[in-house]
Length: 201
Image (cartoon, rainbow, N blue to C red; front, side):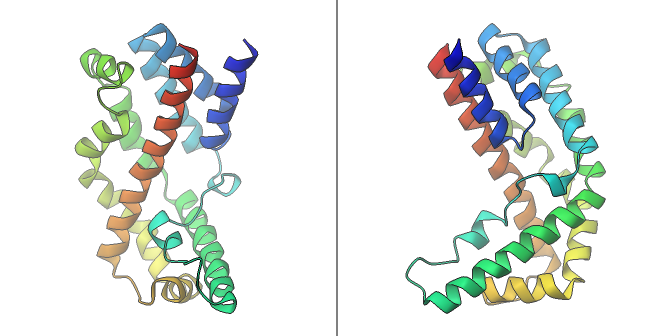
Protein backbone atom coordinates (compact mmCIF):
# COMPACT_ATOMS: atom_id res chain seq x y z
CA UNK A 1 0.00 0.00 0.00
CA UNK A 2 2.83 2.39 0.83
CA UNK A 3 4.30 1.76 -2.60
CA UNK A 4 0.99 2.68 -4.25
CA UNK A 5 0.80 6.03 -2.49
CA UNK A 6 4.44 6.80 -3.31
CA UNK A 7 3.82 6.11 -6.99
CA UNK A 8 0.79 8.36 -7.17
CA UNK A 9 2.53 11.07 -5.17
CA UNK A 10 5.35 11.03 -7.73
CA UNK A 11 2.88 11.38 -10.58
CA UNK A 12 1.19 14.20 -8.70
CA UNK A 13 4.46 16.10 -8.63
CA UNK A 14 4.86 15.54 -12.35
CA UNK A 15 1.41 16.97 -12.94
CA UNK A 16 2.19 20.19 -11.07
CA UNK A 17 0.90 19.14 -7.70
CA UNK A 18 -2.65 18.02 -8.54
CA UNK A 19 -2.22 14.90 -6.39
CA UNK A 20 -5.91 14.27 -5.73
CA UNK A 21 -6.84 14.36 -9.39
CA UNK A 22 -3.87 12.23 -10.39
CA UNK A 23 -4.71 9.67 -7.71
CA UNK A 24 -8.25 9.41 -9.11
CA UNK A 25 -6.85 9.08 -12.62
CA UNK A 26 -4.46 6.34 -11.51
CA UNK A 27 -7.26 4.54 -9.70
CA UNK A 28 -9.35 4.53 -12.89
CA UNK A 29 -6.48 2.76 -14.66
CA UNK A 30 -6.39 0.09 -11.96
CA UNK A 31 -10.18 -0.42 -11.93
CA UNK A 32 -10.48 -0.05 -15.73
CA UNK A 33 -13.40 2.33 -15.29
CA UNK A 34 -14.00 4.65 -18.29
CA UNK A 35 -16.44 6.87 -16.40
CA UNK A 36 -13.95 7.43 -13.58
CA UNK A 37 -11.21 8.07 -16.13
CA UNK A 38 -13.20 10.77 -17.91
CA UNK A 39 -14.25 12.33 -14.61
CA UNK A 40 -10.66 12.40 -13.34
CA UNK A 41 -9.32 13.97 -16.53
CA UNK A 42 -12.10 16.56 -16.52
CA UNK A 43 -11.27 17.37 -12.90
CA UNK A 44 -7.59 17.83 -13.74
CA UNK A 45 -8.43 20.25 -16.55
CA UNK A 46 -10.75 22.16 -14.21
CA UNK A 47 -7.95 22.37 -11.64
CA UNK A 48 -5.65 23.74 -14.33
CA UNK A 49 -8.22 26.34 -15.33
CA UNK A 50 -9.02 27.42 -11.76
CA UNK A 51 -5.44 27.33 -10.49
CA UNK A 52 -2.58 29.70 -11.16
CA UNK A 53 0.05 28.99 -13.79
CA UNK A 54 2.55 30.94 -11.74
CA UNK A 55 2.33 28.30 -8.99
CA UNK A 56 3.21 25.50 -11.41
CA UNK A 57 6.61 24.20 -12.36
CA UNK A 58 6.43 25.12 -16.02
CA UNK A 59 9.81 25.16 -17.74
CA UNK A 60 10.76 26.79 -21.00
CA UNK A 61 9.88 24.56 -23.97
CA UNK A 62 12.17 21.57 -24.33
CA UNK A 63 13.30 22.50 -27.84
CA UNK A 64 14.79 25.67 -26.36
CA UNK A 65 16.29 23.94 -23.34
CA UNK A 66 18.08 21.54 -25.69
CA UNK A 67 19.87 24.51 -27.22
CA UNK A 68 21.88 24.95 -24.03
CA UNK A 69 24.85 22.68 -24.73
CA UNK A 70 26.87 21.09 -21.94
CA UNK A 71 30.15 21.87 -23.66
CA UNK A 72 29.44 25.58 -24.17
CA UNK A 73 31.58 28.20 -22.51
CA UNK A 74 30.55 28.87 -18.93
CA UNK A 75 29.57 32.50 -19.55
CA UNK A 76 27.42 31.63 -22.60
CA UNK A 77 25.75 28.75 -20.80
CA UNK A 78 24.88 30.96 -17.82
CA UNK A 79 23.49 33.66 -20.09
CA UNK A 80 21.27 31.12 -21.85
CA UNK A 81 20.09 29.64 -18.55
CA UNK A 82 19.10 33.12 -17.33
CA UNK A 83 17.28 33.67 -20.62
CA UNK A 84 15.40 30.38 -20.20
CA UNK A 85 14.15 31.54 -16.81
CA UNK A 86 12.78 34.71 -18.39
CA UNK A 87 11.10 32.66 -21.12
CA UNK A 88 9.54 30.33 -18.54
CA UNK A 89 8.29 33.24 -16.42
CA UNK A 90 6.71 35.01 -19.38
CA UNK A 91 5.01 31.85 -20.67
CA UNK A 92 3.48 31.28 -17.23
CA UNK A 93 2.49 34.93 -16.94
CA UNK A 94 0.71 35.18 -20.30
CA UNK A 95 -0.52 31.59 -20.22
CA UNK A 96 -2.33 32.38 -16.97
CA UNK A 97 -4.12 35.30 -18.63
CA UNK A 98 -5.25 33.36 -21.69
CA UNK A 99 -5.59 29.72 -20.56
CA UNK A 100 -9.40 29.48 -20.59
CA UNK A 101 -9.73 28.89 -24.34
CA UNK A 102 -7.22 26.04 -24.25
CA UNK A 103 -8.80 24.50 -21.14
CA UNK A 104 -12.28 24.68 -22.67
CA UNK A 105 -11.16 22.71 -25.73
CA UNK A 106 -9.30 20.16 -23.59
CA UNK A 107 -12.26 19.72 -21.25
CA UNK A 108 -14.74 19.19 -24.07
CA UNK A 109 -12.61 16.45 -25.61
CA UNK A 110 -11.52 14.56 -22.49
CA UNK A 111 -15.06 14.47 -21.10
CA UNK A 112 -16.47 12.98 -24.31
CA UNK A 113 -13.83 10.37 -25.21
CA UNK A 114 -15.60 7.11 -26.09
CA UNK A 115 -15.29 3.87 -24.12
CA UNK A 116 -13.51 2.01 -26.94
CA UNK A 117 -10.74 4.62 -26.98
CA UNK A 118 -10.45 4.60 -23.17
CA UNK A 119 -10.10 0.81 -23.22
CA UNK A 120 -7.21 1.13 -25.69
CA UNK A 121 -5.62 3.69 -23.38
CA UNK A 122 -5.98 1.35 -20.39
CA UNK A 123 -4.37 -1.46 -22.41
CA UNK A 124 -1.44 0.72 -23.44
CA UNK A 125 -2.37 0.56 -27.14
CA UNK A 126 -2.56 4.35 -27.48
CA UNK A 127 -1.87 7.42 -25.39
CA UNK A 128 -4.58 9.92 -24.55
CA UNK A 129 -2.12 12.69 -25.40
CA UNK A 130 -1.75 11.29 -28.94
CA UNK A 131 -5.54 10.95 -29.27
CA UNK A 132 -5.98 14.58 -28.23
CA UNK A 133 -3.18 15.83 -30.44
CA UNK A 134 -4.81 14.35 -33.54
CA UNK A 135 -8.19 15.82 -32.64
CA UNK A 136 -7.42 19.29 -31.32
CA UNK A 137 -3.89 20.32 -32.35
CA UNK A 138 -5.17 22.72 -35.02
CA UNK A 139 -8.06 23.88 -32.82
CA UNK A 140 -5.59 25.19 -30.24
CA UNK A 141 -4.01 27.63 -32.68
CA UNK A 142 -6.68 30.29 -32.10
CA UNK A 143 -6.75 30.28 -28.26
CA UNK A 144 -2.94 30.28 -28.14
CA UNK A 145 -2.67 33.28 -30.45
CA UNK A 146 -3.22 35.84 -27.62
CA UNK A 147 -0.35 34.23 -25.70
CA UNK A 148 1.87 34.40 -28.76
CA UNK A 149 0.96 38.04 -29.38
CA UNK A 150 1.75 38.94 -25.76
CA UNK A 151 5.07 37.09 -25.91
CA UNK A 152 6.20 38.62 -29.20
CA UNK A 153 5.32 42.09 -27.88
CA UNK A 154 7.41 41.48 -24.76
CA UNK A 155 10.90 42.90 -25.29
CA UNK A 156 12.52 40.79 -22.57
CA UNK A 157 10.99 37.58 -23.92
CA UNK A 158 12.13 38.26 -27.46
CA UNK A 159 15.60 39.23 -26.30
CA UNK A 160 15.87 36.06 -24.20
CA UNK A 161 14.57 33.91 -27.05
CA UNK A 162 17.24 35.27 -29.38
CA UNK A 163 19.96 34.62 -26.79
CA UNK A 164 18.95 30.96 -26.62
CA UNK A 165 17.89 30.23 -30.21
CA UNK A 166 20.02 32.77 -32.07
CA UNK A 167 16.98 34.18 -33.85
CA UNK A 168 13.65 35.93 -33.33
CA UNK A 169 10.64 33.63 -33.78
CA UNK A 170 7.73 34.47 -36.04
CA UNK A 171 4.26 34.29 -34.51
CA UNK A 172 3.47 31.23 -36.64
CA UNK A 173 6.62 29.41 -35.48
CA UNK A 174 6.02 30.25 -31.83
CA UNK A 175 2.38 29.18 -31.93
CA UNK A 176 3.33 25.87 -33.51
CA UNK A 177 6.11 25.19 -31.01
CA UNK A 178 3.94 26.05 -28.00
CA UNK A 179 1.26 23.63 -29.21
CA UNK A 180 3.86 20.93 -29.69
CA UNK A 181 5.14 21.59 -26.19
CA UNK A 182 1.67 21.16 -24.67
CA UNK A 183 1.35 17.65 -26.07
CA UNK A 184 4.97 16.75 -25.32
CA UNK A 185 4.43 17.64 -21.67
CA UNK A 186 1.08 15.80 -21.56
CA UNK A 187 2.63 12.67 -23.01
CA UNK A 188 5.56 12.77 -20.59
CA UNK A 189 3.19 12.96 -17.61
CA UNK A 190 0.94 10.27 -19.07
CA UNK A 191 3.84 7.88 -19.64
CA UNK A 192 4.99 8.38 -16.05
CA UNK A 193 1.51 7.65 -14.73
CA UNK A 194 1.08 4.57 -16.93
CA UNK A 195 4.48 3.27 -15.85
CA UNK A 196 3.60 3.78 -12.18
CA UNK A 197 0.23 2.03 -12.58
CA UNK A 198 1.84 -0.85 -14.49
CA UNK A 199 4.19 -1.49 -11.58
CA UNK A 200 1.38 -1.79 -9.04
CA UNK A 201 -1.28 -3.47 -11.22
